[in-house]
Image (cartoon, rainbow, N blue to C red):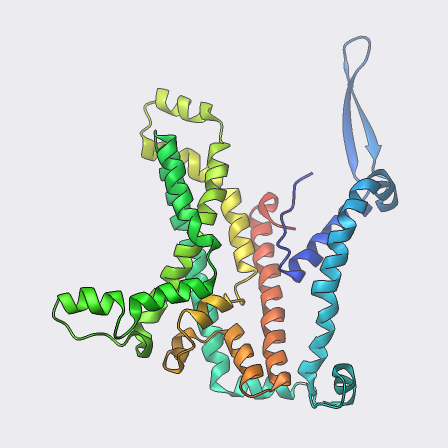
Length: 357
């Protein structure tokens, strides 16, 4: 049976995984069993799957092991989804939280209508999509390139050192990264202004007041933080490729570039598709720490740094508009879920074996 990889941060993917698993168990599949009789001839017999209850009893220990994770998933991911109803109400405080939900006025889609009429709806959607497109594309090209280079290094100790150095930023919080960025881009004492630009005799740049630089800065820091992790994933896949492929290619006179192009990359395609689909599942989700902490919540940078997640946070913190924030979050979740199903459907039409579900 083909394995299915899931992201526990995405309830939509989890639900799809569980639904597909139950469907597989319930379908009665014909399994061919090849046996050899006494005369040495091959006999193909057929056995049918007896359904979900049979599989449940047969794999009961595995389901028991799965139970704590499922309970945690339901408590952490699905029960809070009941709060979506706030997006359709004009939330007002009436005692306790649940009492406020019940007594608040039902306004249907007015919160969504008001949200989409503001200029922020287009701005935050555009920023979220464009940044994630850049992260997805560069998040495949750069890690795959580094993984191939590390695999080609003859000195494995040096390769492990480089791999560890690249992996280190993944463990840093965005708070620490924001201070590293501030040490670089501070107007008065930043390394770039005080050392590089001053050394060239140029006027210091007000980095935190110039939006034009920040798309490149944010993309750089995101790749700097997560490239090492993705390199480890792709490098593990590369080391699992049978060396006989490369030996046969060398005998045929193939160069290193040809071996990478015709052997390594095609064999990595399945993993690249899965990683892309998982990233597409988060295409309407932005890394809050990156977009809020690194630009230091500078108002002049909102046109290029404001995304759905930061907008929802500020809507709650500054305006205390719970209904509007919930409407924006619901919009993000629904469109993101539709995107996952659409992307998986396209991949399934092209190659069924490479789809997530």
